[in-house]
Image (cartoon, rainbow, N blue to C red; front, side):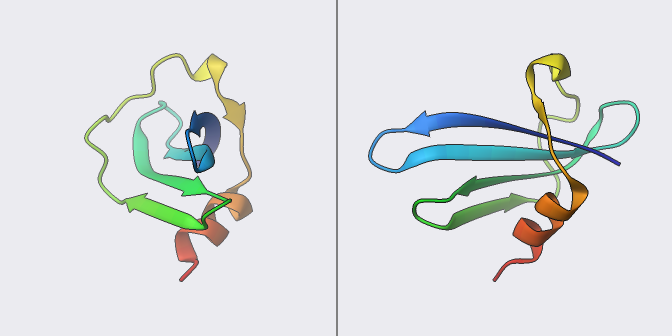
Length: 73
């Protein structure tokens, strides 16, 4: 699996980090959004968007980082 992340500012909440878990063809398997300032996590086990658009614009992420957020209660 390959992992990516990107951030977008949300007024009043801070940066919302979106993480993508992809297979070798850049097909999205799972996705989550994490807002560290509020500790909100939105997990998407079967995303509507199935293919990454312009993955070269995303930052690499670690599998452990994605898994820790996915498994967090």
